[in-house]
Amino acid sequence: MRSYVAVDKWKALTARIPGPGRAAGASGQAAVRPPEDRGARRPIPRLIRAAMAGGIGLAAAGGLAAIAGPAQAAGWPGAAGAVYTMTNSPAGNAIEAYARASDGSLAPAGTYPTGGDGGTLGSGHSIVVSRDGSVVVNVNAGSNSISAFAATSRGLRLIGTASSGGTDPNSVTIAGDNLVYVLNAGSDRIAGFRLGGGLRPIPGSVRPLNAGALTPRQIQFTSDARVLVVDEGGSSTLDTFAVGRDGMAGPAITTPSTGGGPFGFDADRAGYLLVSDAALATGHSGATSYDVADNGTVTANGPAVPTDQAAACWLAAAGDFAYTDNAGSGSIGEFAVARDGALTLLGNMLVENNAASHPLDEAVSANQNYLYILANGLSQIVGYRVGAHGSLTQVTTAAVAVGSGGIAAN
Image (cartoon, rainbow, N blue to C red):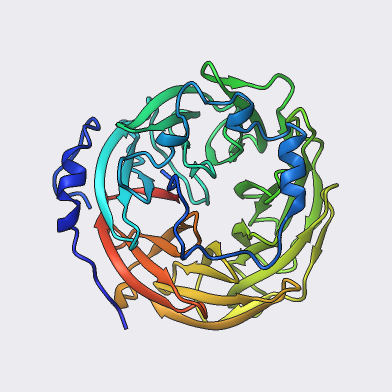
């Protein structure tokens, strides 16, 4: 059963948010994790080791401590977190920010120009937020650039905008609070950056994708930040890049994807790589689970799991579950993730009970309790509470600019 939460109680909160360009009527990680936090299936000690090795640049080791301290991580006083999308306007891109309450409801919290232009995306993770909520990074596909923001107690503050190191940037990822990599789909390259004193390219970090790569869709670090993953829907391949302690990515290791047309993916808390497959050989779409070793070797945890839905193009993991955005059917695919990484289809549900909702991307809150869908066909963000058995209960909607692209949450 759906439940809706009014945003009236946010009036006092949003009245204190002086963010620039706040638009009336437009529909970050909590400093203290709420008690309903969803635990992982098992701990990931490799993440701790990677942080201690200095490979992911934590705030405590320098990072952005001078820009956004722990008290500012949530972005706005009193908020449990935040959700972000982009206007993606070719006349000037901007971040659309929403404060998130502990019950998952959203309230508009300002728009923030990126200093770049929007453009063609068709990808996942075109905007991301660091694990602690202190940094937001996005691509500006129309101006071949990326931008980074600090989340402060007064909203977002632009750290800098820089050339993406290639053409048609469509996806970006961050490890810790200062190591950033961008996927340049037009030039089939990835490029690395450091945050601190601005957005600085890492010399020698540009790496080519595999020679046969077609239509690269997304870049993301594995959950322990030791490997970068890029999927290529046109060639049905996965490229992995082992990342050294200095943040430098090694050469691409290419693996044919088990499912056809890999599009979006996520790394869950147990470390599994979960990939949406937009074009299975059966004519359907679905999802596949993989293990990724520290050296970049990829092994499937069984065959692709099909749905009867069209165009499973994005995927987000939450606790023991994964959810695909089925753009062609206007629905969400619900999957259970077993302890060994195997996937089981639980079912599908329409977004806003509307087959024309055209979901384009999705994100999960840091506590894994809320799933947010960017419904392009409705110009809305639709939010759901994730139940103990993977069920979704709608808790909020928020209006976004027509043509908005990408979504991130903390």
